[in-house]
Length: 67
Image (cartoon, rainbow, N blue to C red):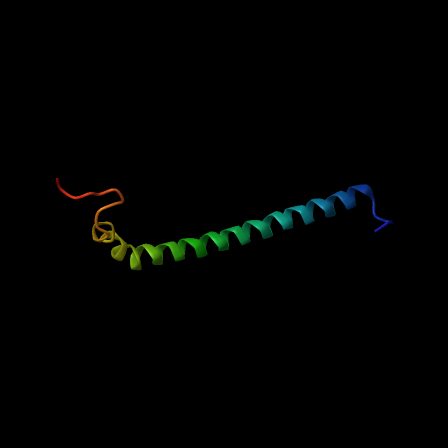
């Protein structure tokens, strides 16, 4: 590495930096796809059960009934 010119060293540094950015971008893309898939599953399978939930809880705190 000592025998390389400054231009070559900077070129290698730029290539390593670009490679690191590409690796981070691919990791983020894979993570977003996984989250999107999970969110889709939750909304399709769990949301129908949650839609009727608020009406089944009964009166809220402080409810004293009809006078």
